[in-house]
Length: 294
Ligand SMILES: [Zn+2]
Image (cartoon, rainbow, N blue to C red; front, side):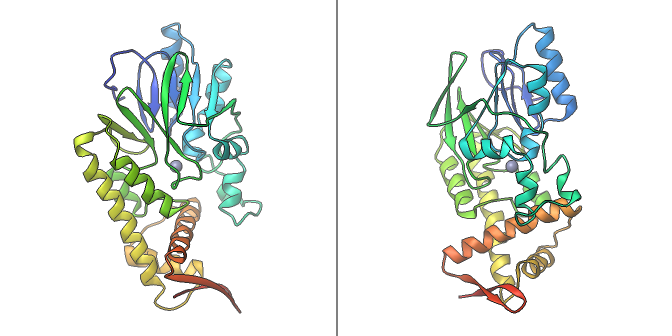
């Protein structure tokens, strides 16, 4: 449990971190059932109520706690941006898009890719979000996900998956992006922020003085992935073959079908980025969609 550098007592959660504070805003992150129970017990013991759940984006590891919290605290309102809300309220859509828009096979319907259904009560629009008398600043961090946001409050930037901690980067190899250009832009945007602390969804609380180094590590990981995808286009190939070449080149290990489906998706995002840069293009050939260098 990480203490946030604030003078009030609040509960704010992001990633696997939680800091107890009030008024009780829950910043939804990858929360285990143990963490959810702890939040519930802590609130009950303090005779305080949960007011808000903020979803930064729809990924199941970030909204998996919604159903539990909404059931335990019916008065709590849940907030998300418009596109993310569409996916949060229809959790089948994450495994659907990971399976070419088709009905997803069983392995894609795990809790890590398909959260329990939950509701969104209010759409987040604009840069200000007043909740329970406090004004939160909303920052756009699209790229990792369609309409991802971060939240800024009292010198702390909750950056969701706008960047990853170095240990997480080392473990996963390629940082996931739905749109690689957006991901790069989000990193540059965060580089210009002046908050004292930055908290990623996956990683450690980062002081401003250390931020540039961590962001550099993210930028480098994206560049390595982009180079590997471009190198894999030495001869024209389909998506699965390119993914296999990159996997071999970067010595990436896959834990199972769900992780591979996510991996295939980020390789596809890198191919789109190469097309935008005028470096690659897809054509329909006898064996399917084939990518070539331009
Ligand atoms: Zn995510």
